[in-house]
Image (cartoon, rainbow, N blue to C red; front, top):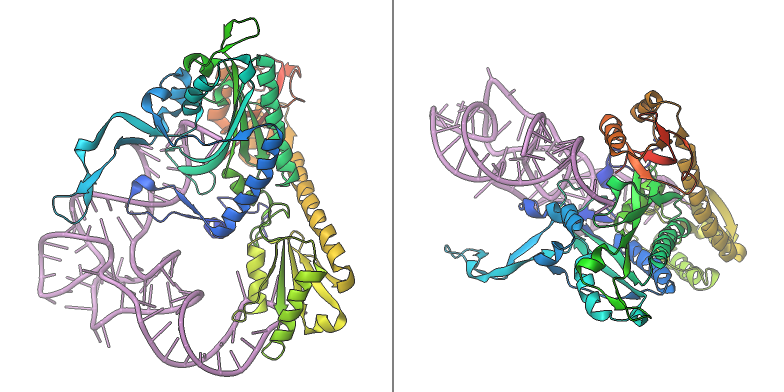
Length: 491
RNA sequence: CGGGGAGUAGUUCAGUUGGCUAGAACGCUGCGUUUGGGACGCAGAGGUCGCAGGUUCAAGUCCUGUCUCCCCGACCA
């Protein structure tokens, strides 16, 4: 068994996630390559994410809203570095009508329907939202304004990878507007912490988080903060970001408010987001060679009951399972009974393992007679015989225990694969031969960062609180460094 | 956009000194026996061999063109 779990390089990678998504089969048209179909089981995970993170977002005083998919081209060109960051990966709507083609066996673009101004399919919604915000905000009384939207966005990446980078993906993007910079900065860090907490509590993922370097920051932001998770193969996966936009956008979108003294001011803004990439992070963090392993809090099915029966005792066993779900497992959510009589029990065991269901209960006549059942945990494959009287309590405890031990494992993976090195030679050697992250001083110059990236493929991931202000030497040039950064190869 | 690889059944693929009716495994359908770790037997369905042209008595196989996909880079969540 490999110890790297499911990664894009693992054998049969494409087989592993097939319960969650599949590549959109649009092979005849290269223009839509890189799109994904999220299947019902995968979407159920996404719904759990939406529900739980959605609650955290609401608790932060943020309201949900929805803005248009299409952005006038002129909006995108207002903030110089923003447009520079996204210009090369936009889908553009140029016409609004089709007509029958000359041979009569299809359709073609009606050239007469050309738009005067092209529309951009949103790669992110700063521009279209902030144009609207400029109409909503006139006074200090309108602030802070905190808006979130769950939406799809399109980024025409040159190269896509199932899960980790698709042309279209779903996400949540939050946008807030504040009267003072300190307040905006606090919001940025609060939301960053929200993501870290969500990753820990729900996804059972331990992460590093902190400020991104100049070259890694969001196009148009003053500062970007990120959450970095480590996959089982030691590579980094950026999980969420939170940006301090300063006044960059409020100035060009003409958002102004009258302060208490009656002076017109440009407010301070933030934006923050997490995407369906989380599904990829979730899979790659916990799963093993037998398939997915899902943390109970996010698993669409928490407990699956596999009845073991033959033609003679089928009804009896199935009736018992229903009873089990209704009474013996009262209060345990998302329990599924696999009543299929056309596949073998062994097949079902295997299938639910592949789907990552945290707990499997096996019940046959043998168990019924003994007033017990067999309980199997997905994370450790441990089998327990549990008396029916204590079943509910044990399952409740087990679910919590699985959640906890997955987090512990993730923490262990992160910490045990984060190293320090004394020289650049060792730094280089690490990324050639070993897995995992490095903590190393960096003088902050773009030259050093670029050289390191070119020579090792590793980049700065973030500057953690612990690394901030830690004096030392730049791992590359040897000059004085005042911060220690997290370095890693990333997806 | 650069470098590699590949297009044959739903999927993964085999199939060259060109030669009969194009194959396997898995999956799918039906019947029967099974069901405590991916069941088995029998019967069956499923193909314009990416597309176009050429060479030949004969092309999945050789030649030319063309399209597409995948992988590795650059770019990025």
